[in-house]
Each structure stands twice: as C-alpha cells, then as structure tokens.
Image 1 (cartoon, rainbow, N blue to C red):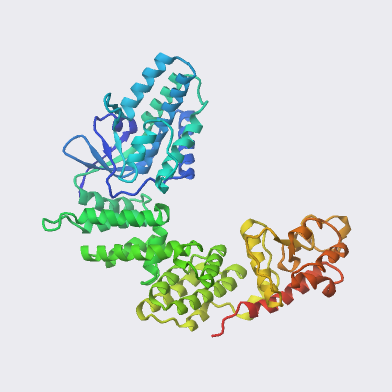
Image 2 (spheres, helix red, strand yellow):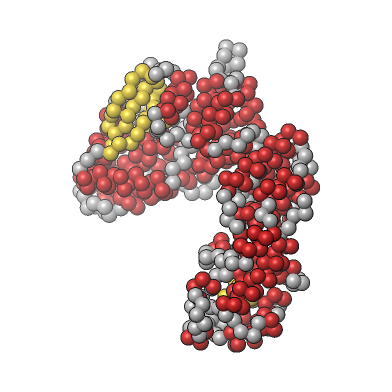
Length: 558
C-alpha cells in the first residue's frame, strides 16, 4: 500500500499520552459535526459503559513527523469531539468546586486531567500548550474559549465556531448533574479514553497522506466525495522550487470554497457543479469521474477557481433573498418556489444557465423549470432521477452553446391528460411546507379566476379554510364518504381571511356559506352560489374544475 508505514489499533488513551501534539493541517475542513453526530457518539459511549465494553471509532490517518507530533489527515471530527467531551466532564468537576464539593481534591483532579488530555498551562501567559491543534479557522476559538472553560463568545463568530460552541454546550448539558462527585467524572473520562479505539494508519509524507484516501475508500471506509476529491487535488499539486507556495495557495482557495458553501453541503455542490458541464453522474460515481478528467496542477487550479465562481450561484439558488437576485422580483418569486417545492434536480441546469445565458433567457428557463417541476414533482410525484437526466442534457447544451432550446423540456413535461387526472384527486397532508404549497395553488387559481389580491405564502392574514372541517361533528352527517380522505383534498380548501376563519370551526356548511359570501377572495365568495351542499361528490366536482383550470395556469407552449 503506497506511502503507508504501518496500521495498528490503539485506544484513545495511548494516543493522547504519547507526548506529542496532534495537529489538524491548515487545509483540512473545518469542524462540521452537528447534533445528530454528537448524540450518536454519546449514545455509543453510554452503551459502551453500560455493557462494560469497547467501542470502535474507525480509521485515524496520521502523517508522521521527525518528532512526536502527528498531523491528523482523517478523523479530526471524531478526535475533536472526544476532546470536547473530556472538557465538558472537566467543567462538570469545576462546577462541583464552585459549589464547595471536595474543593482541594477536585482542583487537583482538574489540573491532572487538563495536563493529561488537553495540555499544560503556562504559568506566565496563562495559555495552554494544547495537545490538539485545530486548523486555522478553528484553533483560535478552541484555545481562547473552549479549552479555558470560560464564557463562550457568541457574537461575530463563524458558522464552524458556532458549531464548536454548540457541541461543547450540548455535552456540557449531558454532563451536568450526571454524577455527584469529581472522582466519578474522572472515572468517566478514564473509561472513555481507555475504551474508544481506532485503527491507526501512519503515512510518511504529505503526498502519500493525500493518496491514502483512495485506499481507505476502496476498503469501504465512508469518505465523502468532497474528502476524496480534496485529497486527490492536493496530491497533484507540488511545492516546486520555482513556486514554493502552490499548496498554500490551493489551501486558501479550498478554504474559501468550503466557507462559502459550508462543509456539509460541499459534496452536493460539487456534484451539481460537475453535472452542469459534464454527463450526469450519481454521488457514488463523482470522484471517479473527476479523477478521470483532472490530471495536472493546471487543471486543479482551473477546477477550483471555477467551482468558486459557481458556488455563489449555488448558494443563491437556495435563498430567494440572496444579494444575487436583488431587485429582480420575477426571479426571487421563482427561487422561493424552487425551494418551497424542494426541487434540487434543476441546480446543475440553473447554474449553467445563469453563467451562460442572457438574463431574459435565464428568467424564461427558470419559469419553465417551475412549471415543469410543479407538474412533474409537486402534483404527479414522478421519479426525480429521470428529470435530472434531462436537466443535465439541457445544462451541457447551454454550457457548450449558450442557447436554451425549450423543446428539450418536452420529455419531462407531464401532458395535460395525466396532469389533470392526478390533480383532480390530489391531497396534501398538513404540514408547514404543504400548507404553503396549497396556498400557492389557491392563490394562482384565484388570480386565474379574476381575483386581484396578491397572496403571500407566509402571510398570517390569508389562511387556508377546510370547508369540510378537519374534525367534522355530527352536524356534517354521514353520506358514506371517507371523510379522512376528503379533508385535505385541494377541492376541499379555499382561501379565507383570518378574522373570518377563526369563527367558523366546525359549523355546518349552511352557516359557513354566509361567511364565504363576504370574503374578498373571488374563488371563495362564489362557493355558496355554485354548491348548495357540501359532500364527497361536491369536492370531486370542484377539484375537477380546478384541474381543468390548472392545465392552463401551469402551461408551456412548445
């Protein structure tokens, strides 16, 4: 195995007591674990203690140095989080000291535990010489606030610094009140470090540290495409005598990219970026595809530079209020819908379109994407993989020619017959997102029918009214219809002002009609004149009429 000195199994305690430092290189990604990972690790520790067993933490890839120090090439998230757990337990002992519990003994415990697992305190500067050294974006906050166990800085902190603070505070809450004595917390720390173990892979230099990721991936270790790609790209860039700062330059560019995207979104972004100009690949094929095309240092820098350009577009597609769309209402409304519909498949297409089309053509394409997506995704719920392939074909066409051919959308445009059939029976289960989707549908229907009011999806003034109530009483009778299947049908819903809606509750249809007739919404006001009773047949009839309108409202003329 190229570049690997040895592979051993070690418990955390044997690592931390070797007398050296563990340094996370500057180029490594920032701390990115969140609640799900924190809780998973904590539950694993609790189970390990309950069962009096060990727990396997996976691979830890270390680059050796001439002394005892080691660079953590992979495993920094786990290593850092374990350190936070130890610090949270030490803080729990400090709380006992504040409360006057075994002050002398606990002060000695705190000092010993900090010296053993965190670092030595300089008596002059009162700064810790830490065993763990984080990357350039994390280390200052770690040293100044987390290690010192004081008040955490909240204002003017980065996304990753907020994660670090929240992680420590979360473990601090788990530790608070867990035990009544400092010795029990000390025993907890000792058990954790003695029973969490890693497979340690040591590599001899920076380039082999990069290349070892591919070996790990082949062994089934779950590394993200972004991790694999980063290390592959760095392996192609050498610090030559003529250009000694190449790695540092690439480190800076990669760090900027990661900060712009945020680490947990980076693998998705890289795939959408790549698919905006190349044949579509799935997530598990992405690294192989990029490795097949990027072979030189020149290509590495070109790739990273272009990804940085595209990253701004990607993040703007996720936020209708992004500065990129400032003053463009026709775009922001559709970006809001793109995210409301949870449509990620068009990202590659939209990034290519924004970069290579005139603005009017981009807006036309974005509008078409919303119409196609409404029919395909929102109403008909068809296979998203199929639609992504078509979007990719259009994206590469735009990338190569700067021309958008609308007819290419026809393959994923649900025809009127299918759309009307599905729309006629569509129901949306109640949740915040679906309520906004239904409000959007009814708002478009209202305008189509001559209404003049603009409907805000977030407005609390304009509400959704269930004509057949969500909890119908005996006054609604029993007409042999399954009420549960009818309540959330589009045909059973209308727009109604909040001041009217709050008084209706479960009143009979005849009483509701008096209120509907006073509404400013055209499609609500005419309900009493069109339907003299309300039952399953009425809901089916109204929804079929709405579906016939919908095929015109959401339509593309090819």
